[in-house]
Length: 198
Image (tube, rainbow, N blue to C red; front, top):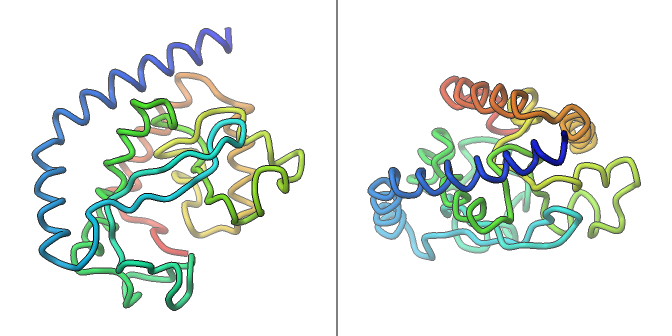
């Protein structure tokens, strides 16, 4: 039954992400122009993340910060909307979560799902998949998601260990209905803009 639900989930992902890319294509173009006009650098932020079974992949997001932001100031940590590394357009994209839209490409490619644990960078909170404790590796049993259980419960207001435990809880409780409930809760979270920053 779980295998069948995962197959249906993948089909659902492909259909919804493909429709989303078509429907939001004018928005994607407008955002691309706005980013180019606002600051120097590429339209997309491309970064290596850990995916299903710990296999690295390249995630796509709209660039919301200055080029090489990870090497400036607080590094990976973004404490608030007043972080000087965030561009003017970037603040709007982060508040509305529109910076996540290019990840629909990752969903179509099979790197990601609409719902699942958020994919961590390859070097944090652990240095590579092999350094994760066995209990935490369970979060990599499914495709990472654009949204997930941690995003609709604690988002960025909790420690990495707590978020990982919530990710493992998602893997254990997975069902299609659970995914749909998370998608609906995500819409509410985006609308209320809760816990965007740590």
